[in-house]
Amino acid sequence: MHRKIRVSISIVSHGQGELVGHLLRDLQRHCTIPLEVILTLNIPEDLPFRPEDIRIPMRMIRNAGVRGFGANHNAAFRHAHGDYFCVLNPDIRLGQDPFPVLFEQLTDPKVGVAGPLILNPAGSIEDSARYFPTLFTLFKKALLRRNKQELEITGAPLFPDWIAGMFMIFRVGVFRALGGFDERYFLYYEDVDLCMRLRHAGYEVVLLPQVSAIHDARRRSHRNLRYLRIHATSLLRYLYRRQFYKYVRDVTPR
Figure 1: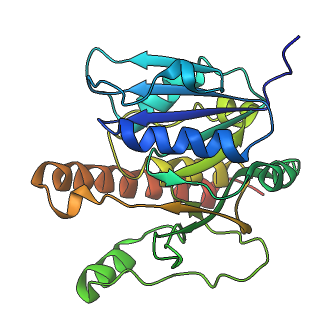
Figure 2: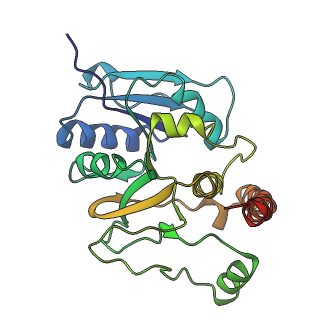
Figure 3: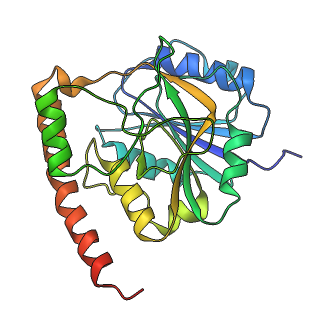
């Protein structure tokens, strides 16, 4: 009899089969808990590895057309069998098993989502946990042209406004109750939006520096006008929704 799946991991590939292969081997090497992978191929690609060689239960979804970040992960969630649902970028690498520490934090019913400390390939801390963006902070960031760490990272759990979507883990009941990602965001800010809705529903967002993952960031919006346009559209949608949630919070009796 198979052990019950503890965590369902959703990975979406955009022609990133080589990175996916590295990540799957990391999961296979370091993780001992029962897990499953839902791998979505968002564009046609031939994988450079044989799925049958991976000793992790895996379901593959081949999209007929390109879908957005939230739509892909929401679709994967409908196939999930685990107690936890993990959104994982294909360009994440693992040197340890992060899940036991993350599971322990998620036993707290006040916690809605958790994630590990994110490092770049050089070992420096990435700015993956932040305060909610405002027009002022976005203008300041654009003016100074620097990506300064907003929160001080110590060894203790950190409770930011939001954590980045390259590595997020939820209890399945929480993700389902929130309706998953808002699919009107094609790309960018869907992670901020979901954390905003979690916070509005009374949940906490947690970053756990006790465990880490490496992220080889691919910031396409910095180089490609199409992605820059998508980024700007998502930002405007987020700013509009932020004002709505701020208004509801301010007028709702406590």
